[in-house]
Image 1 (spheres, rainbow, N blue to C red):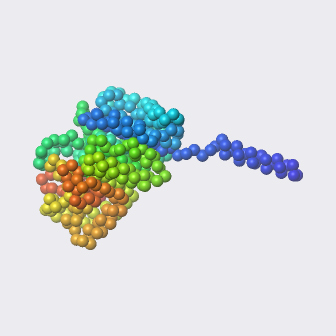
Image 2 (cartoon, rainbow, N blue to C red):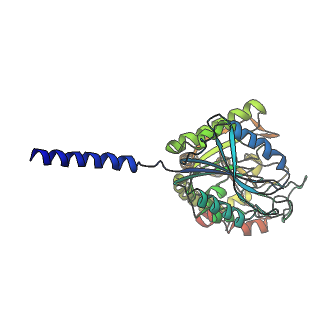
Image 3 (tube, one colour):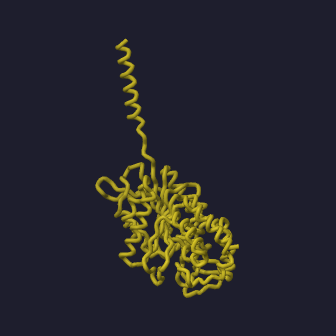
Length: 383
């Protein structure tokens, strides 16, 4: 009896050990993709930012739990690449998929295809996404560079997300959302101008947990990737890591040029801001058209009066108690914000970390488009 018991225990012991040995729990796969849509006048900056990425921390070559992907389209043959660092410290660059020359990266179809290709090559448990290009926030395609309503036109600028110099296509914010909504991202970092607005954040609220963006334009150097890389992959502490990315951004531009604005939005907290905004918009709706916009903090240049500080806007309209209620909700959503004293020629006197549109009666076409945005459907800003 003792012999049989010993053999059974030995067998059970071996079974547990061999099971643990052959079926080790695999680490979850975290994939971060940087999408460079640069077939435009920013193409020269891609190589500099890629060099920054390569100088920074990279996952180990052959590691399955951390995958760093870069989609690069700057006028040549677009390609999806994997970046890693081998045991000797050398950067390894592998082409995952090459795309035909002339591929237009400024369409929702191409963005969706690249995301699908990345997912097929490296099925992810968690994801991070950086969208890199021009940006014009919530504005419709072509509106920033060629407004169809009367505005002050000092000069025309090509500022739109993913502007392609050949096709002149741009990706509107609803189409960005449509391309992304099949997946969910730990963070969405928008390395583009004017993307830190409530309209953009609300449109993307269901596709990511955190958004990193600038409510003003951003300088062409973009994110300081060398210092951010490792933070992108801190999947266990995403909130802390993305806030640290924002601090890195602010410190970099404060030291270099004293021109930079940045903020982090926690999408799970947008509901409270939506409710209080809806109530206040209903009460003060007609006041928006009559308000003195010169007293509101602007985030725009060159007469493109489509972007104002959200907190400053509501301060001009509401009572002290209403404003405190609004700011409590806003600060739950905007979990980090930082701005230099000036952004180029714009003096930053008031900074809540997020931009909004202030309706104007003469912007007939823009108001019609604005009514199609999810934020307007939820809050009724433009009637």
